Image (tube, rainbow, N blue to C red; front, side, top):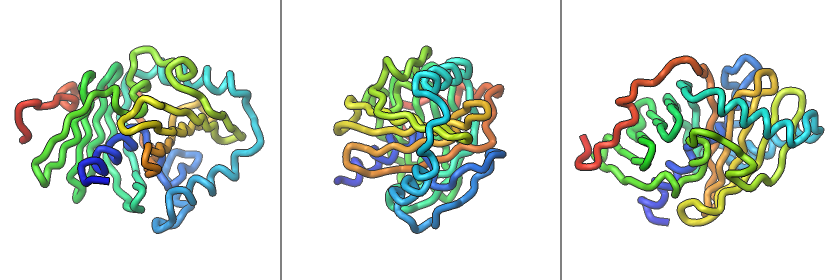
Length: 231
């Protein structure tokens, strides 16, 4: 895989990545998997705790749709564990429909910005910017004005226990082929806490959200892409 393809793959997975650190009930990250463990190991360890359904699939999907459609704005901290086992963090900004920004904390130099039409992957250190159509990315459906998971994606499975609900979906129309996505919700208020994406090449990125603010409206300037040059 080329360096540019790897960069875009990482950007795609980050749209809704599931972080290796699992969230405790209060929403704070709790690292239950060593930082040098493969992402697949992290997934396996969590999946073992969710094998007794506590909620039927139709109810879980309806609750997920309701949460997304009730919250057009979100500001949150995120922690990412990439396929190469590198751990980074930063802030996530969402303003639906169509707008999103992943801003990495230093020393990382990457930014991912969606302005409603396109997605820009920017590297401040290299002063580069690659732009793609939103339709090429996984999780594009989560930036729609009206979200219907069952209609917009193919649902593979739903698993639940007393603490969390996991919805497994598939998107066959992403850059390079099919991506598989797992969304993880907290059953207390059915808010999105984690997700994982396996890209068409099999690379997995895990990201976790904390300090979620659903009332703060992000500054619109955060979602502007300069198509002429990179500053």
